[in-house]
Image 1 (cartoon, protein in one colour):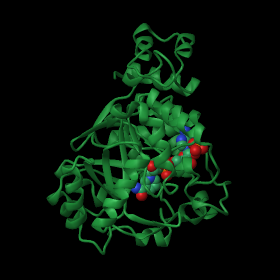
Image 2 (spheres, rainbow, N blue to C red; image 1 turned 180 degrees about the vertical axis):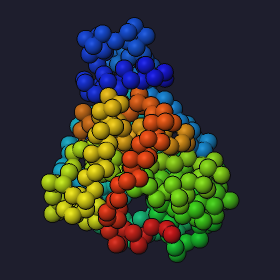
Image 3 (cartoon, rainbow, N blue to C red; image 1 turned 30 degrees about the vertical axis):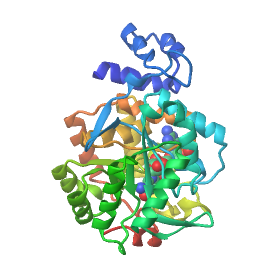
Length: 379
Ligand SMILES: NC(=O)c1ccc[n+]([C@@H]2O[C@H](COP(=O)([O-])OP(=O)(O)OC[C@H]3O[C@@H](n4cnc5c(N)ncnc54)[C@H](OP(=O)(O)O)[C@@H]3O)[C@@H](O)[C@H]2O)c1
């Protein structure tokens, strides 16, 4: 995508919230841009509405995915709220119609509900999308329990995921958390067997250390590692980037919008007394206040780039390496249209350096995880 087309697309999405061809006409988009809106079928939105070519592709190891995917965790109420199945299915299909072909879920999201909704939403276009899911927690009486990556448990989890996802294969299967009780070689060997059986196409790890990545990759090539990575949490740059680059493995940043903090939707006045954000050190009143220079900086750069804060936060991630494909999450179609506009925002090397100099002056407060979650992260 050239930069003129890119910025037009970004601006149009910013102004209109996204898909409509009519809106493009209203804004006087040039003809080549209009042609872009009438793209590949099938489409959930009706003929000529799919904008597959509005979204660049990225390589994660041996896998090709849309540069921006969709994280399907918030829709099961993870950050609070309760969302209707029909609305979330419509949201997933809206993402597909906007060119997203990379969908992220997990057995424990819900548990099970996210996989069920993803499966139902994408069944009509199954062969055109990449579905990523994860095993690695026990689930008892509807609640996630301890880590469990024993081979028999992996097999049971995969059978359940296949059923809920309405498919005969999982495109990308991640171990959700490294299980210290099960040697990585056994986990990788089990996934390798599942790949040989055709039930899984690609192997991934989530929040794995460089050492675990190497051990897994030596048994079964890893296509992607999923880790928390955003302007609010940059630890992967030092911990795993060199290993990923050396081994040719892709990175899928989760929480790329800092759970909403980088979008401007959360600020020093936000308060979380219940729910997931109430447990996180970055979301205490003190940390929110202390960290406000970061969204202020993002806002200033978004204005400079004529895009939104969410678009800048995602465009910055995409600019870090060609083997990165973030998976922002949302429950809101307007927010989806907003962050997908990041595909049209490009940052030059000079801009990235200038941003980095300003970013370096900011000192962030607060860990990204609560103590229990952190205790389950591979070191
Ligand atoms: N591997 C792991 O251990 C792990 C852990 C966490 C997450 N994940 C995966 O990563 C995905 C992304 O992470 P995440 O969803 O937790 O966090 P995120 O993408 O950083 O942020 C999601 C939050 O940002 C808000 N948001 C999104 N777009 C917005 C916009 N344009 N304007 C304002 N607010 C906006 C959403 O609220 P609205 O609903 O109001 O839009 C939502 O609460 C998840 O969905 C999940 O698939 C994986």
